[in-house]
Image 1 (spheres, one colour):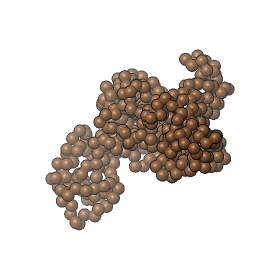
Image 2 (cartoon, rainbow, N blue to C red):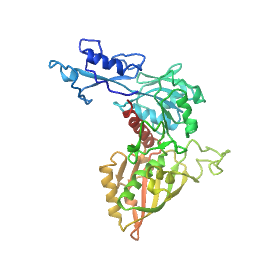
Image 3 (cartoon, rainbow, N blue to C red):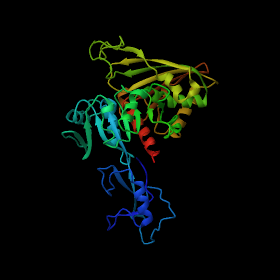
Image 4 (tube, one colour):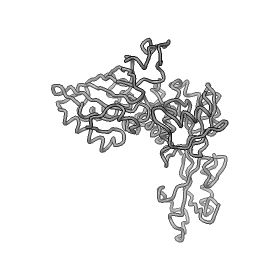
Length: 414
């Protein structure tokens, strides 16, 4: 549970957590649902912020004029997070989170079948990301990241996970298995309060959100199971939003040239998709994707207007979308690129990047943005057929958005 208490706390020369009876009562009410109230203890997920960082206004409190503003503290209980599935996205998520010093999230548990030793090793050493700069160590049933302890459990049944005992607020569901309300809902039954799925959700009762596009429609009282959509939808939706708002999309189709994933086979082996049964390292593999259609989940007026397919290629990371669409008014290349540039510097800053450099896929590894427009490849045929090419790190960039969505959810906690 996340909140900022309205109590005025002065830690200088005192171990007490309040200054007067009014503040004491507020403290007690605010922390009633927690098992302990420890100033300065990060073992329970609490952290301290100076009042210069937190907006602080309460006329009812008796603030002594002798008290320096920089000595006044408020306490925040971070949202306690568990990661279910410590594969590519689970580990990328943890790395992204660990590099954010002022996060409202506190990762306290991981559920994975590999155990603590393997989890720590794969987090520290990564063939794509390189060696993690943090100090990572394995314990008997935990790993530590720069001294921060994270419990490791192992159970394939979400109903059996100790989320209630661990006081878990939010589960980052990163297995790719529990993507509907029935499956993801098992985390809620086990004691978690919210679930964030790192894959396209299934069913109308799973809210889909793409940061930069429709995150403002998140309702904390309604959305208990949410999806961060797919990496490709996160690439598509921001620049499609710009195109649709500026020019009006009539219809369109896209192809994503996508790096192979763990779902594919290193050598030929059985798979429910016969094409994906073939060696990922030796072939260009055509396959289906719902990424284009899923844009309609975050931009409803485009329902039925977009479609696409995927080509899985023998590269381990970074993918690229090629989108062709008919727009509703006459335009030209410079105008289209101008709209992207303006959005990248304004409303979509940090989500959409504009690039006019002559780069290739590996140059976009570990890019934080969801979508990088390759401006030199933008084309307009006639005056209403627009072609857009956009790059994306399908692991790191996507995982940054998972953290962002988690932060958004945490900000709504009361």
